[in-house]
Image (cartoon, rainbow, N blue to C red; front, side, top):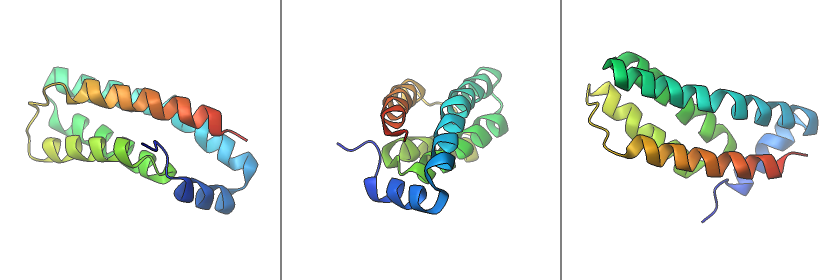
Length: 111
């Protein structure tokens, strides 16, 4: 399984350049865990808006890099939040695991 779409990443790198791609990776590595923490906070507070917004942001950021599996998990949680369904089961744990794998891969992809 490929964690990052090589063609999507290559297109982003071509569009942004080597220096900016590293900055984008670093921003993702810093921001994505905060988004997951925001999702957890929204879940704990039963605040569907906070949960949904953080899931949406993570989905969009993951899509930017071509992390399609991570984006799909975040999209599923976003849809649940939009439907006011916070019965996420172990999906947030699965998302955390996927984020950890994608983050490790992105670290290796820095220029």
